[in-house]
Amino acid sequence: MARWAAMSRFAYAVVLLAGCAGASSNAGPARTASPQTPPASVAVANAELSPALAPLAWWLGDWDDADGNGSEHWVAAAGAIYGVSLHGKTFEVMVIDDGEGPGRPDGVLRFFAMPNGKRSVEFRQRTLAEHGATFANDEHDFPKTITYQLAPEPGGSGEEGTRLEAVLGGSKQESYKFKRGTSERAPELEAADLAFAADTGKRGADGW
Image (cartoon, rainbow, N blue to C red):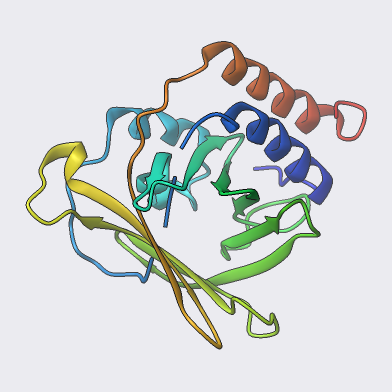
C-alpha cells in the first residue's frame, strides 16, 4: 500500500483537525485484557486500514477526556490512522503508519506526533498487544514512550464499559483516561476529507 509523504500526512491531519474543532478524546500502557467489543463503526473502518494496522482498530473513534477538558478523535483513511488531540488551548496531530516513504509496508509501525503544529517526531513500535501498543523514541527528550491501551471500565458493560488510556513515559510519567465520546458525525466533512486524501494520494503536492 502506498505510503504518505510527510507533507501529505500533515495536510490530511490538518483537515481532520478542522472537522474536530468542536468535539471531544483518547489514551495508556499495553496490556492484554479483553474489554468489551468496540462499536460496529470500528469494524467498518477496517476496510480503510492496511493489514498491519488492522489490529489497532480498537483505537478508532471519539474519546472524551475524563477531566472534561479535552478529547481525542481517531479515524482510518487510505491505509493509515489519523488522530487529533484537543486539550485546553493546545492541540496535537498524530499519524500512525506502517512504513516510511513510498513502497511496501516494512513491518514497523510508526507513530508521528505533531504537537501544536510543530515538526513531527517519530516513535517506532516497541510492543503490540491485543488491545494495547507502545511506541518509543529513546533520542527524544519527552516523552520517550507513548502507550495507548483499551481497558474495561470498572462495573461497566458494552460500549460504555470501555475506556482508552494513554501513558507518556520518560523522565516523568503522564497518564490520561478517556471514555467513549458523544460527538455527532459530520458526513459532508468526512466525504471531503476522504476526497482530499484520495486526491493527494494520486497527485501528491498537486492534489494537496
